[in-house]
Image (cartoon, rainbow, N blue to C red):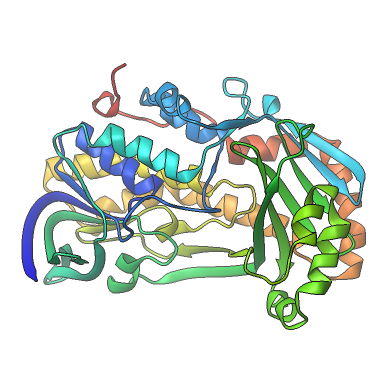
Length: 407
């Protein structure tokens, strides 16, 4: 086994949307970047496949929207809310963003490969698969790089700035001793996929039944991705009771689930995703910065996590570039990213928490009130105002032309 050493301006742990976009933008500006990805490919399932208008607005600003939308995807143009089989109300993406009146459903492997294909054409960009960060390098209190395990041996990356873009279970956050300010867990989304009925259209649906709440999303190319909102602690009990009661719940919930439910013999087809949000107290240390889910994990409620993470990545590119130019990579300087993102992230987390209390409740009283509350909200301008605030940008994010791609 060999021990390799490389020197870079920036070392990014994590090859998800935030890490790749940050690396790509910095490399576009001539910064020498390496992205370390622990997996051996971009395969992702049930993770970050809804790209909200704000994500596409950011791509538009760096002239990549047309490029990304050229890859296989589908568009979500409206949403409908149901209680049992009664339609309570709905919303249209027309009221969220006039310039981009839809959300994009793109499987994350397709998105990440598209970003990588664009980034790897830049001479100062490098990505390494199967490179899991195991240690951070230090000079005194300053973090000066990372050590990763690879199939060929140990890789030591000495970097002026080390970025943790490695998700909710961030190795950089753990190894760097970053402290959590808050950490909330609302319950679990239990995901499965079924064929999409021919008459479904391009709408997402949220449905409250007497048993559980559901989110049902058209999944490219011809499926529905279904999330069952299971209150905190109940999934273990569901499994202990065996598959039959849960199978009956799905059979009663929606006709589109029937074929899937009738074939169930165990819980293997389900994928569990914790509905949690957290916020790291300080995102920066000398020579090191956390972004995306490593810094401010959003819950799946509203499917806004990727969009928030990428917004942070775009802002981080500008902050890191200027910090490198000025030779100041202190915690105070890198901490400007958090100062610029703090208010919005906290606000979104609070709105997600309120929605989760309605969607994940198991209390009969709350389940009776939830349809009434939802019906009232959808008939006012409040829902559209909240959606515009969360799902779209209120204005352009300042992005220097050094980060803009040419046609």
